[in-house]
Length: 262
Image (cartoon, rainbow, N blue to C red; front, side, top):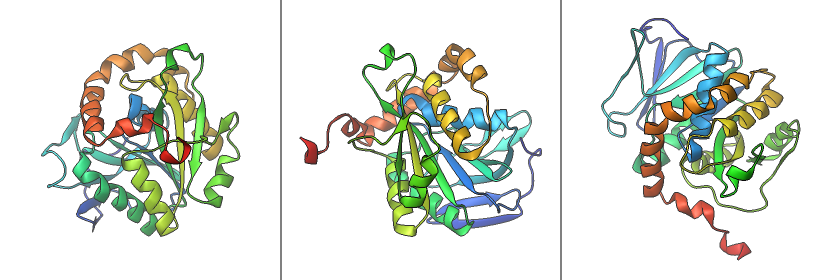
């Protein structure tokens, strides 16, 4: 997953956010974004992809004013709280800390602009959509939302997935989608039915299967499902922090119909 405290080969600041490259970040087709959100679906998805493909730690992202003054320690390595890992033409962005509401606009816009500058073809956002009947489901349903026709074509390889008929997205994924539309970056949002405030590895497994269809990664979800209870326990503190942040950014708006449909 990367060298011990690798040196920075290139750095760039975008909207106040520093992107610190430990390897030159180029020739990437897919950027998978897995942020803490509903059911931690995106965060679990990102971590599973990174571990399964043994991705290398390629880019650290930091902002001294917008993030807590922390570094992550892992087996002798010093890591930034927001990181991009890479394997071949697929990259995954994850974070160990929820993005605070005040920092969401600049962070989301910076991710899209960085992707545009690096020639990334598709940003794939991964998240959960709260479903009060989630406990009754044998397998969560998968949905997709595209920023443009090219992203819609990418979604055509998804089996048993559909566009949501209506709804509201709140948070960083909403801004990433709007910025992608504005800057002509192709953004595909993958959503799976999920528990709202319980880590949901089974929902993440559905997202991973969708990513496999799109990217050809061929990542197994067997371990993810087998270790579901352990993952729920390990990630409960992050879920608690994320729940508090979601409340502050008006996440409850996602659970009502838009005015147009009421």
